[in-house]
View (cartoon, rainbow, N blue to C red):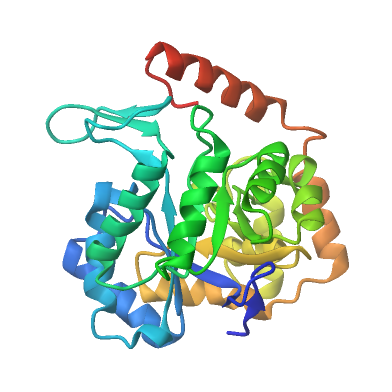
Length: 325
């Protein structure tokens, strides 16, 4: 796969990045084998986070890359979400499906927490550095200068190559860049797909202004676009039939055609699924097809729902109420 620059960094990423969240249908050994095979197939950039499996996914990924020369892979990690007894900050959600007591996941980007997140990730991944570290969710209770200052220190120590953000608003992205000073904020990781386009209305202009790379997660809307469900499903099926590909490839090809996109973070439970999604790279949808898709899945003028959820989540978190906002 051709490589694209990631913001104002020396990193270059392929248009498809392999995400490691989810895939509970696979046994641990199957996941490790799939990731190894994907790396051999050319998926050299992998995205992960301490939250995924509460550290277990990073352990498995560490096994998958253990015998791969480090220069052959790039690891994109995260910091700032914690669930241990020492965690502080607003409650993001409560996981009652976890074995034993429910896990209370908090936004905690205090310097000591950020440092521990990185060090624990390096231990689990069995590596000496992370190519990119993104703040997983904004922490509204820790001074931003403290969080970004610690990330800069980790960067100076060689444990982190580049710094980015995930799920951040336009205002938060600008504030992060101010806190970093001369060091660039290189990326933003939003939810972005045909069915979830609020990023275009809210943060896209800021990403362009700050020269950020954009790493889109949930490019198939949690599988709903792949299943061609709901409004727009008929058009996805129609274009899939015309191009002799699955609806998933059509939806992904639309996203890959967006000018500011650096990469889409995809997941798969088999090599066959990966091959299906790879097909999107060669589709080259006509401008008429792209326009029809954009019209069928119109973007909101502003993401009021996202703003309300973020505000309510912050208020409930301070009150200690269970929330997934």
